[in-house]
Length: 187
Image (tube, rainbow, N blue to C red; front, side):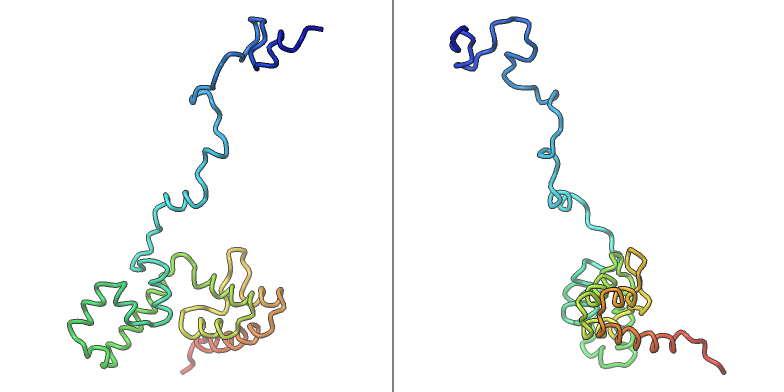
């Protein structure tokens, strides 16, 4: 048997036979290299590269949150047109007509929730059995008792499936309240 040094194993040299394929190439050219997972962007990098969705009059998710809370100062900070209108007439919100117009503006922003944030918040409240948060969402937004998640389940179905008694009570109450509003008036 030949010593290891003669075979080139000790010095990591290619074998002496000239017909070996691949030996002697120091590095693979970038063009020849296959794409690996390390070359792909991370989920965070992909989100940073993606343009923000067009939310119409909504500027971002925080704008929607401020509309849900009816926070006038925060809404003025996010909406230059609203700020300009209210600066022109400081006492405008004293008028019942302007108050109802502001409420319409606020509810319109909430209705334009393109990302479904309102439904996600409602389902999160159901899963956490947070009756107070769910009641607040029903009372301050356009949330319907029969709202469905992306899987087609209603709020009540999720509450029953997960055995969340507190939110079940709230959903039943809102179902009754909203059913009265939806019923055609008899004259």
